Image 1 (spheres, rainbow, N blue to C red):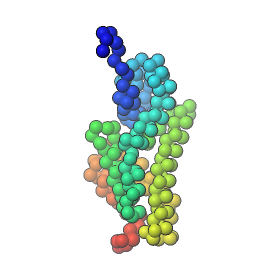
Image 2: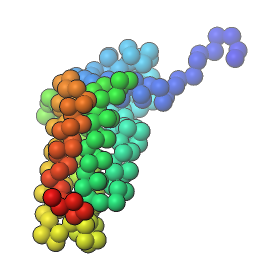
Image 3: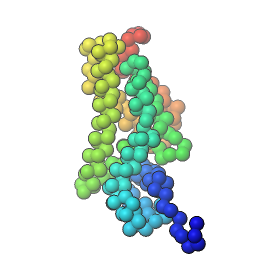
Image 4: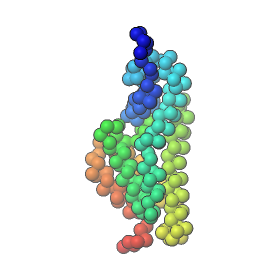
Length: 200
């Protein structure tokens, strides 16, 4: 490297820093000054690399989905609806209580306490969570078609319940609840989904 040449900007490292800040502080609680100080860059460099704060947040959410929420797709591949719900909820707890990451969920914490001018951020996160709910709904409807769930199963209500349980587990994790207790709660939450193999 020639003398005096500046070190290349590590975009991935900067995204990781931003993701953790939005995750722990929320969108509204994270200022551009906070971001640039943590990344070691100035505001013009942030705008040049990412556009603006909201565009940066959207990119970190995409990164979060790709790196930290792959367990959703894996859970949907479980052989039964009950197993899918259990895997989803237990993996939610595991992801929300990683020792090297902020507690809870970026898609939940990110939109807390947003002002009206940040409504688009809230809507972005609502859409993200709705996408996960639709994956659960599709999985439960498949279970009905496969005979794994009874025809009378209310798939939309089951999907809504499991998502609400996951969001509650994330909030509890962010508040410091022990992983072991949350895993027990996850197992209880999944038990609402009928298990045709063990109906008792």
